[in-house]
Structures are given as C-alpha cells and as structure tokens.
Length: 144
Figure 1 (tube, rainbow, N blue to C red):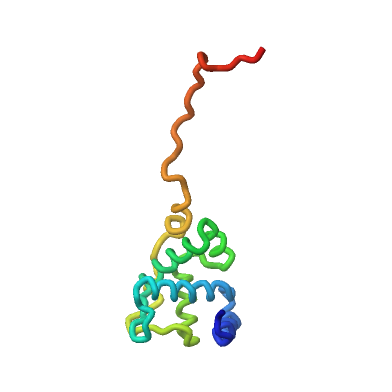
Figure 2 (cartoon, rainbow, N blue to C red):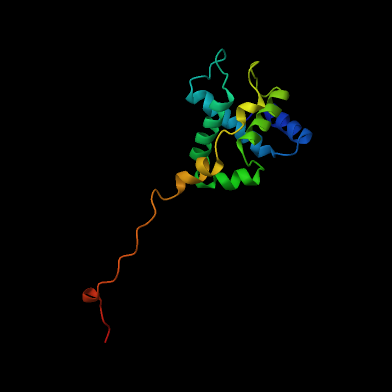
C-alpha cells in the first residue's frame, strides 16, 4: 500500500503540470524503486540513480511488469520518448518526491533509446519466416 502523502503529492504534480496523468508518475516512482533495488541502492545513504541508469531501469521494469502492452500504456499516458521520463522525474524532484545531484539534468534523458527498439522489438519474432514450402503433388490427397 502506498502512503497517502505520495498519492496527494502526485495529484499536486498533475494539477500543476497536466501533461502526464497520475498513473505515469506512479509508474516512474515504481520504476525508480525497482532500479534502486536492482542496483543495490536501496539503502538510505546510497539511493541516487542517474538518468541513464533510470532509463534502463524503466525499460526493464516496464517489460517485466507490462510485457507487450508497454507501448500502449506509454502512449495512453502521453509518454512518447525518453525526454518525457525526464520531465516526469524533474517534476517529481521539484515536488520533493525525488532528489538530484548537482550534475543531474533533463539532458540526461535525451536520446536514451528508441521506444520501438526498447518496447516493441523484444516481442517481435526473432527472424522472418522463410518462404512457404511448395506443395508436393505426390503427397496431395485427392478427394473422390
């Protein structure tokens, strides 16, 4: 269960900047926690995750949590590129739901990855099917 103040804080962010819905912020918050754990940074003195690290964590968390539905969800939330994740993160920073170092900037999220490569390609067939075999007339069944 999430703390009530987190829900209230996210609602305040959405009211101030309605580009992204509540669920998009909740998703990024959950992806941040996932990334911190995956990197062993879930201790109070070592929580910081850089932009590029977070983008990779978001990618992994999204694929693990939502599978082939990721592109549909992100589209519904108005998230079209990595820069959108940066906007969400920096809105969270401005509202004290996340922190940054002196070197962290929105530019850390620019050009992170193509959404097609990150979220669609993992679910595409690994290779194109070969040509259909030609029917062998000797094996054809003829109905009377």
